[in-house]
Image 1 (tube, rainbow, N blue to C red):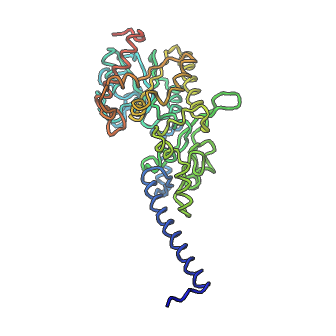
Image 2 (image 1 turned 135 degrees about the horizontal axis):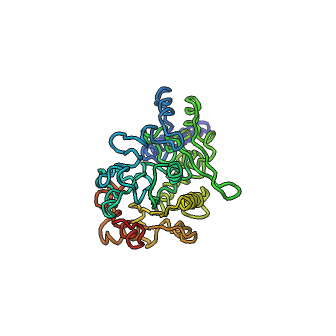
Image 3 (image 1 turned 180 degrees about the vertical axis):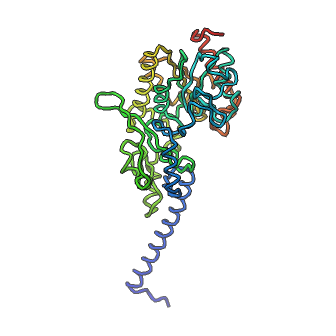
Length: 393
């Protein structure tokens, strides 16, 4: 005959079950957080570097922009740049013998990261225009770094300046430490950058590049919020960036409920789309537009024609195919209202693709492949020719 358990035994039994469930959930949460960490959604502080490595980085980095290293601009480096600091332009290789008609600023999409020099859209554009195009784009730049580079670039003699703006760049303009935005990329573990903020008078203020000592950098990596006061992507902040730490159940809940990556995934939009909302807490749209406005002003004062080239990602094209609108529409409206000239390459790329999948123009869904570079060059060429921006042909 079954003998009922006593109250103390019942309590121990149920307590054991609860403890087992909690431990199982904690273990599951640890596994889930590890997975998200590997997917670059959860922030993992980098600790595997020496003081010698860090000091070498400080000594070699570009002191205003953060990267690349000091000896990259203004002299040949690894066969990729000419004496003006431009990417090599095989169509017009000597900047002294061939004064540029156009100069380009931007990130890796402007640079043409995965193609050879002759296949970059800047070089193809140079061939189409029959004049030198200087390509001052560089991998990983935000609009802020691109503007600073232009402002400091005494080698830029071109009468026309094109700012290549990848739609994803809006995120970089509210970021100071790249591993917080693109979590856990090993070769970017030291990647600090400047950024701009808008002061009480509505003007741009530069938050300069930090130069912490080794011990301070280690502490910053562990607790970015204590050092990066103008970083939107700080752990435990509004962006929903978190570290893997116990209790893992709580950490996982915070990530799933607040991370901007996962929210965008849930709603089926590009991960940066929300930042184009005028009321987004990051103020990214306001800052991005203010940088472009200042860029335009400085270029105009230097008697240069300034044009923004909006470059679409695969996600932009997929979003357009689904919703028949572009994530960056608010930026276009602001540029139009301020009468800042721009080329939106999105519609032209979509028209070229017709029924083809967007990724067919991209390398592994990131960066244009050779066909994509050619398409972008032709889009810009048709615009410049139609507007009679460049006369030399």
